[in-house]
Image (cartoon, rainbow over all chains, first blue to last red; front, side, top):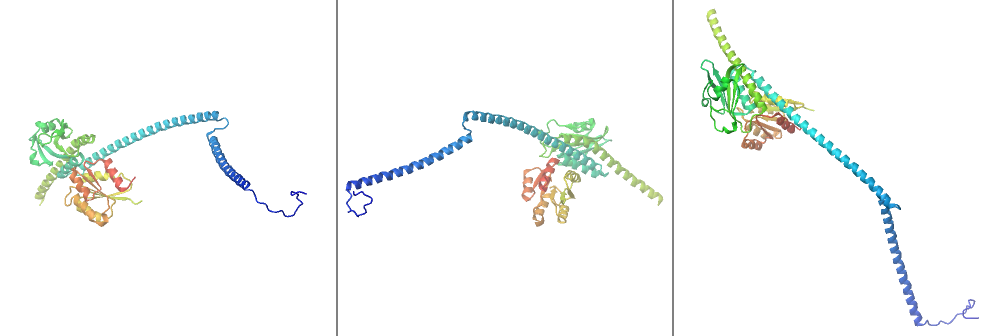
Length: 291
Length: 125
């Protein structure tokens, strides 16, 4: 029987472990521990790399880098280019359409302004005509003519002159911006005003802005008041309101309207007041005879 | 929708008719007229207006005084006022605006301008 016999259960005396063996054991233990640490680090690195590989694979799938990556990429790029071209065409068409609609809108806006301007002109002409024939009172008619010239035409200084058929003189009956006495009577056929009355046509100064100082003989506009060829008077305009830069199409239409309508309004009012006066005279005679 | 009440204060019958004729083209408006500032004030005290248009040069009471009195009235502090006048100077414009006018239009009036201003102040699209 030997010491190594497993059946031998008798206690053995404890013997001391040699020092060099103990050191070696420690070294081996250290090596094993370091190996374990190294293995753990390797495992961690491995895990990181696996994760990175998974990420790259996922990215690859997204980018179409399959097994036939090159071909797929070309095909995909071709489709994308085609799509891009089609979108570019669509964009160009939309831009063209947008421009066409914009032009159409501008056209509508311009037409709206034209129609509004025409409405404005018609409203002015209607109101002027309506007011001129709204009364048979001479003074009222003159007041309305003044109002129209101030408010609808925008004149600052002007005069209304009526013709005395016996003396052939155009005498001032109403003014605005100047005194009546500052606009002397004009002989028919003489000067700008007299000639306008004689010829019976509107007169417009060539450079109305140049006339800054008031000169009764030099109006910037003269409008003859006439019924057919019979001259009743003349409207002389000397200056315009500061905000009025010049004459518009409406102004010329208003001048034409004023020329005809003011003459009939003044003539009717004069006839009416004369007939009224005659009627009261006749009535006076009748009263004298019958009482 | 209740109609918008507009008051035109103007001594010239020609201008009253022209302004009224132009503004009647707006949808659902009721237009009243006054001959001067005093007549205008009477009408304003008798009813609430959505817009007041006034001339400056008028007999008895001018438009500037009228604007000032309207703004002193607690009931009419906010009512939009448009001054329509022959006075085209900057001083007149500044005076009217400083007293509380909302807009200043010079004569001869342009219907596009007048309707546009009225629509804006009445809140009509």
